[in-house]
Image 1 (cartoon, rainbow, N blue to C red):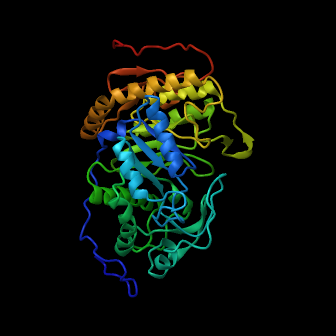
Image 2 (cartoon, rainbow, N blue to C red; image 1 turned 45 degrees about the vertical axis):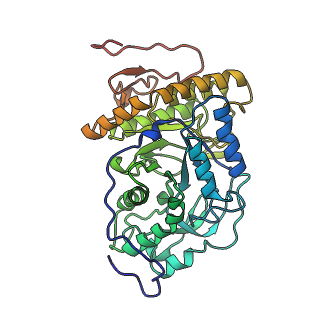
Image 3 (spheres, helix red, strand yellow; image 1 turned 90 degrees about the vertical axis):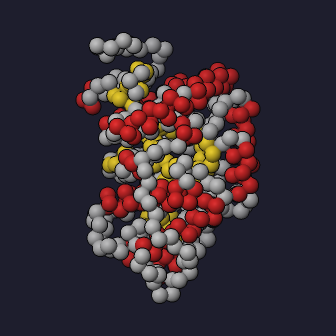
Length: 418
């Protein structure tokens, strides 16, 4: 098992081995999910109860950043999320699972650029331990990312993995249901990474080991129904487009950081189709689009468009993974116009998605057994633009509306009945 480094014997009780995770997505993960970017305990309760009081089904709540006392310690900020264990219990009593955002970065300096974020003093309290014991890649090299500057955990180092797992244990013992594992590894830009426990490794190998480790340990501690939410394929900001996790390590694959306009909806469909063609099973996007500003020009605001939002709700419900998430933290009842209509529409589509949970789960089990996908683009990549039709399993033909207006032409695929 490698043995603990001198002076680093503060990591007790290491398991002898953690089995590799099987390709599986829990049934509960097909319920509708909701998420906010900046939240706290009281706001999270109000958010969940707002849906339930309007008879809109909710199956999972994502606690996005900031929630930690620093990046990354796995310690909920007591000012923002006091008594976190009781909050998980309360959400479970409502039938709502809890998933928390995380990356593999441990910071020397941290910040939240978003309005309403936290202010941090000094380095994460676990940073010096990790650096002293050799638990970061590239000999503790510092990398700038969107939450500060820090170092990446070495998932090839057996003792580093033990150290990392022990820090997760408190939250996992509280009954945490999953991690939203974000793409912090993309900011380790060297390829290969020359300094790891196993020597030089390709950046892609590091990325895949990162996502695998969070899923494997979560399932080792909390069982087969533990879920990780990852980006199988992504091209955002100045990061090159690539696949991140392997298909078998992506129980839920989400498209993130799309503009909240028609171009963002099309971009989400493009990324979903790429992933489906590569064999990823459970896919979806941030309903409404995450970004209210141009990711390449932050001075350009992207105005809210109620028609885009409503069309995205329908498209999101007709994906295996349905999740509401955006930088403006909108709920159906807080949109700036056509509120009653939007609430009724969201209720309809979320309820339909909820009633299809058994259908989605069955398709996923078949897909994992056969190596197929759930979402099947009707056309090849050269013909996606302007079309974007897809088939769910072999049962439903979906033709999303991807531009303003109340109608579109839909060509039915030949040789079948629809």
